[in-house]
Image (tube, rainbow, N blue to C red; front, side, top):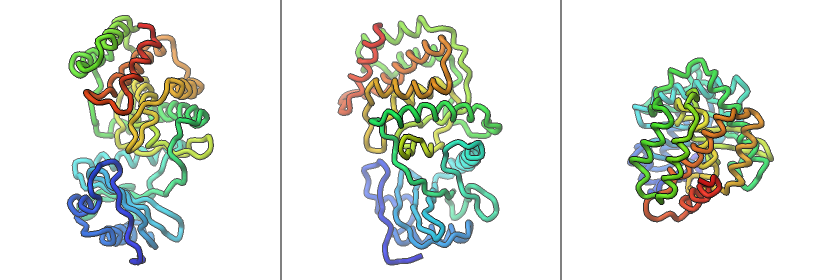
Length: 328
């Protein structure tokens, strides 16, 4: 690998010095040392010749490196958190399977021995192709509707994934929805206006029976993880939060969080929610009971984003606007 330029070092979202993080978390004295390790590891296990390491971005115990090769740009992603290694291997299998089902994902490139995720030097590392696209623009109605349609198709595929039970659980969501929402109101909503809490309780009290099945879901479907080109979604990335839950819980969560990115955690207007849900319903229409539950879940997820204390991005007004629209 060419030594002329050290890779640019960045933090994905944390306000930490990336040089200190590279040394303290990953054990590299500088960017060039990290770039050499990436090049040597990819050369040994994937047979890839690296011409340059352009950029390394870190988040918690994970790092991503953009590298140049004669065959195009690739993305290496590794973790130094051993308890996540088995999950990363299963997520790589899932993503590869979704790619085989013609879903827009960033598929892992198999190593020389066929592994999709390689454990070496105390890390777990995988390799993908760089997908040239832009993060979902919630000001583009076409992209927003396409994202809704993509989520519906993705959920259909995830419901059919034959190895769903092999993905280690991140959280248990087996309680009935009524119990989950009321439990959240009892334990996490004391900072919210009483009118909003009462409105959600009334909706839950009048909810239809909870017969919604659980399945594998992505659970982090938002602008930061949706790549677009023109009016199309070309890749859904980062399946590391995948878990079992109701697809309507994910739909509501995705609608509320749709515009969030690494350093931008503000809400989107209700018109964007409507565009997103219209795209979803065009692929998978909702039964009347599901539509009623969706209203409840949208309000729950909107209220769950309201922070105690300062609210610089306006989650509180956004949630109250939804309360008023529901007329509760």
